[in-house]
Image (cartoon, rainbow, N blue to C red; front, side):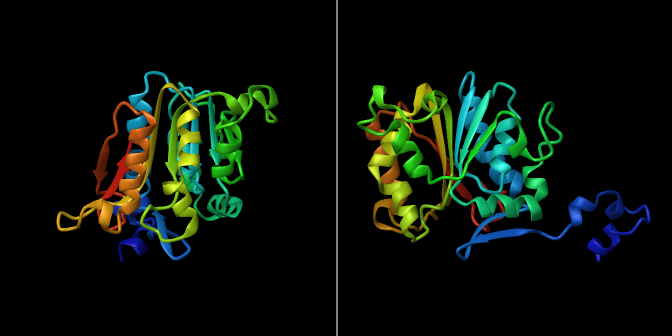
Length: 253
């Protein structure tokens, strides 16, 4: 097979380019496909770079989720970034990815970074519940005089990247992420004046699907409505087909 030949040293194309013929690695959480090695670049580049280039000078960035480390990897490729706070509730996901998916969090080709992106001096990884993290720091009622965290925690974000569960996933935490106005308002209030937010919205609807408000994409409609009410000047949805999820994947920024 091409894979077996890629392991040989026979001078063939396969042997010279073994990465092209390596087995596909697939990550599942709660039975739901999260990421694949063949779709790594397509998904994470599409999630990160449009919003990073949309901001004129992104210095302070937050990632909600992103356990594999690949979203962090793409953010750190931007030399304007001074700090990237990644709030991921599942520490086991991060450490397991480091062990078995090293290439997804490899920043060794970024000047001034480290072999593991989490060790980059600009990375600040918090193993916490992102919902509570944002509400505790930027939620309604947080008193300027009673701030209980480091001052840097209250620094507004230029870009926030929500790399969390698909909105179509029917589990309680997904409902909180996409339906709880308190959390979404705290995220909005944590942005700088020209701040940008992006989130993945799961598989793109088919032309034959019903309107989002009455179909399985209900959470897409709810979060879009919330964001518009909060005051974002524009909301855009875009799609790409290289994430290796079968269907085109959609994003909102």
